[in-house]
Image (cartoon, rainbow, N blue to C red):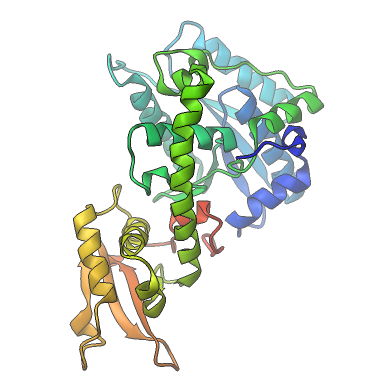
Length: 359
């Protein structure tokens, strides 16, 4: 991502409102939760979300997770809570208690953090949880996945929206540089404390930041090449529709025009979101299913004779109303996703179409 002078300007109320617009609609007086660590990124997000919610007659609740991994972390969490209270923002501290693992600590902490945050949102009846990941985080994520040899779908990076059974995870700052968040706090005269783990070389992200420029750039170039393929998937989003019953509609003719690899990747993303499973189908299964979607239609079997299931989804071939075009409709099998229609999070991160999520 090319850095411009605008990347060092504070984020204003209008810019943040535009960043939140793709996630609409919200309640008339929205109450949203914001995950806050006390660092610059999440503090800036909390302040911006606070202003955004107040304009709409709503409010935010800042949720601070104390992982208990460092001496004095409880005091840091309390200081962050007090800082937010002084800014007129309600805040609560959530503690990760119990034994901590000796290995895989960062991943375990992440799992515990999301569990605590989701549980608290459910307890409070809050539907939306804002996360402060930004453009620099996104670049680092893609670079790390490239270094591990991730496939093209893995190189898509973090999603801007993830639908979970009880809460929606929203990342409105993915297009915003960290320098702008720093400028936002400086303009408001708000101090922050950087997390020491950001420079702890035991962790992969910290090692990437500390790596010689030549190493980081070489790995990043691999990610950028893969990003070209991702743009193809972006274009494919244009042939998808999503209905209020929670189904994705794929234009068969448009699907057939895609390359074989892109067909499998596109179908994999759709069923991952619609089916509600944690992982996409295996590559070989996705490829076989994609071939079925693109296969010639047998005369007299444009309906149930062509239907099948894949990864908790039902795929049905039907004619479009009032026309002769055929469409594949991807439904959640046995109503897995229940109350809300889903837009695949990967597509949302690509700037895909906006759809309703909350009545």
